[in-house]
Image (tube, rainbow, N blue to C red; front, side, top):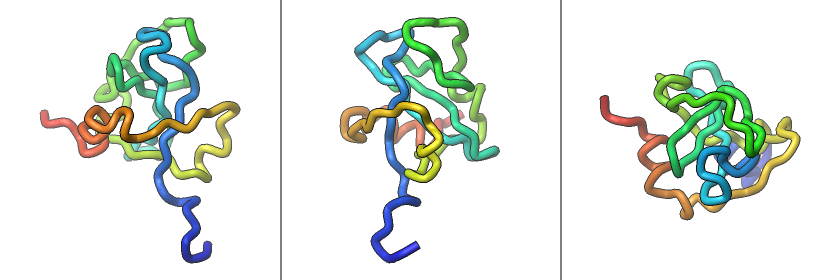
Length: 107
């Protein structure tokens, strides 16, 4: 890795519109802190999935606390290379929701 290489910095991407919210909110890719596995999260309705949902199918509903009890982080560019499709999302669009989720929720 070279100086200035951003491949290890966190990035924000979406895999589809949220099956609950529709086009109002994206399904974002986050990484579970305890197992370094993807978890999918909608910042609009706060629904989460262990696997990428297929819009508009809603066949399961979870909370992020249920799927990632130790917290989440943004994936790196390298980690997202394995995703079939992804769309970049501006962090500022969902800053309030993401800041709360990424720093952990009070219990």
